[in-house]
Length: 371
Image (cartoon, rainbow, N blue to C red):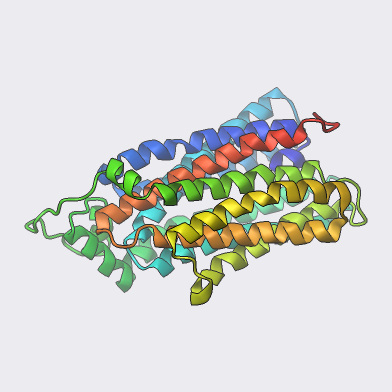
């Protein structure tokens, strides 16, 4: 989005996003070594890198006065790649950390991810309304957005480092994981003032290979959820929307509706009758989502914007709902160290799905005027 605001073409935007996703594969290395990596410093390091990268985007634009060219583009690609590394640190670490706690915790984390998307869409609509008719309005909106993000990232560092470890429920589950042989919570327990008992018996745990074999359907399902979603959203919605009555607001409304319904979908598994726990049922629902591909194609070709908004909302809702169903069901029944490994592995497959979806997103451009 920042690339569009600073004048680069959508082609450059695809390149930068691909760089970020490629660097997210760093999470695969982290997941492979999850049992030996200190989760506390992994996540704090990720938040610090988020803060530096967001501030770097802001300073890059201010330093170049919004100028385009090879130099600013290379600098932006480096910063976007840093976001990918930070994402691999934070998302995998947090999911592994929360997986051995209550299912509601990991659901809340993914609700927070969706809420950030909804907030971003809200800020984009506000900045467009505020700066649309002013000189260099898009750039001003981007700068305001980046300034707010920088402040939020700075706050996240302190909240995770000093507030989160001292919550009684967090201390309880981390102490429980340590008693089951987890070494990833050592620094977290120390930060909370808890001394780890080294005399406890070390329990045997399943290897990563065994976990992959026992839970292949969960991993494949999460991968397919994001392959489908990212092959449509947001690239198709920007490249294939055509001309409509909403004009330049139309793609922004589509993105906002997706993000809001994605947020709603991550809450609805709390309703027992809507929470899919059957492994077979989850896979059927995930595969059924591929009907969105012809649905979006024919809607863009023959229907009006009302149908497209409804379809985009359904895409967002099913993405959020099925993500939470998989993420909360998969770690159940394992010991703390195994649940930490499950959380890390699930994020690896989620990010692989995002990367594959973005690559497939290019297929919509074939036959399009901009191809």
